[in-house]
Length: 162
Image (tube, helix red, strand yellow):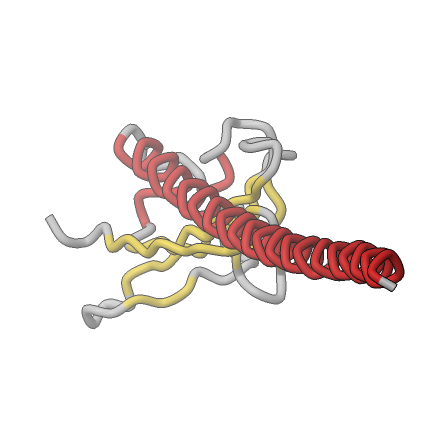
């Protein structure tokens, strides 16, 4: 009888060790999945922040590029020559009155909207039809939009203030 009880205790111990091991492994698996989900979520957030920063830097590049051209412009320097003298370095969107400058950056785009003085202290958007041959010196304000990875950031600069 004592021998039978010892065999039953050993069987019960083996069964309880198996159940205990499964519970511990389940807890470890759930913890690992939680950590993985948190890491993936942080990676997505970091990627979105990186795209936003890149888009802002591209917009800033557009402002700097225009500022440099305006500073060194002659009265006849055209807007279309901001990105060099080639006629193929830009596209004008006839419906939205902006220029997209190409071949500046491999992964991003710069969209620029140009404004001229309205004569009353305000600004008028330069129309698509006048953009290619408009003189840089006539531009009083710009909006530079940087686009990177589906994210857009914009900077507006008023050139009328001394």
